[in-house]
Length: 334
Image (cartoon, rainbow, N blue to C red; front, side, top):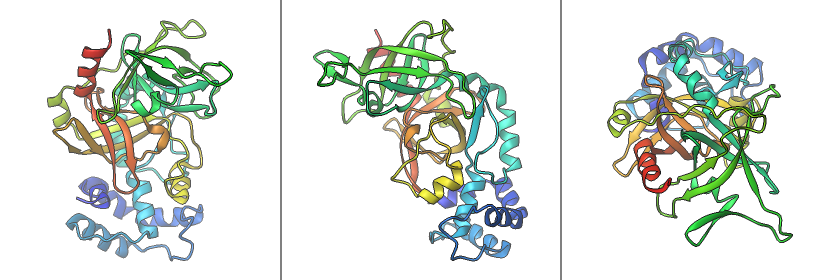
């Protein structure tokens, strides 16, 4: 199934999209929501219905149309997180009532997980931050190998923080807040890099986090991991993390979907689309580069299904399944 086909497989969401399509097209045009597509006339509801039918049948051929932009913004929105709960999108585009109702049903579970995902901030480094991490055991956070390698490296049997030519050492902290228009911080020092999986293996790293934050606050709760069987039974998820402006993705798409707001905590609903025997899975939530290390939370269980590590725009996102993380913790977190 191609990317756009999977966005309209849900019959209730598909019906809402078509019922409200004139509203959506008008809002996109009025609010500048079709940046980069100005030469095109806003699509009609009849054109949308024909396109959705071809998507459902798997015969849709991508054409970078305004129709695609509207479908993507409506079916895979990205919500801001404020005061440890998800609020609205910064894109100023109409929200799906169907998606909002499903998220509201899962709100207690999502609100348990949101405080436990943090931004990996750096000191003594050219980058201000490197990605996302989340609590997987008491004192232990998980992120991606390629995130940890920004500030740490292997030295014999251990892992050390990188040093510069002047002798200064890069340090990392996890800020569990970093919310849009909220000044509050909750910063915990990364005391040790426990493990970085080698190249060719799962894109996973384990970090030991300080017992208390810089203001003496307690660690956020651990996010429980799904079993392999639970992952196989899960479809609806939400990705929690810190998307960054990404030069590899369409600038116009980013403005439409993220409202030009980056580096703050976000929640993006989506679906698991493929579960592989190699311990990986694919999903279709909207992400950007800073989402590396984000957690995929199952809406029904509130548990972590996977660790996001990469995405290809309009193709798929990729994540490490939770049971693989469980094995790495068992073997490497001593």
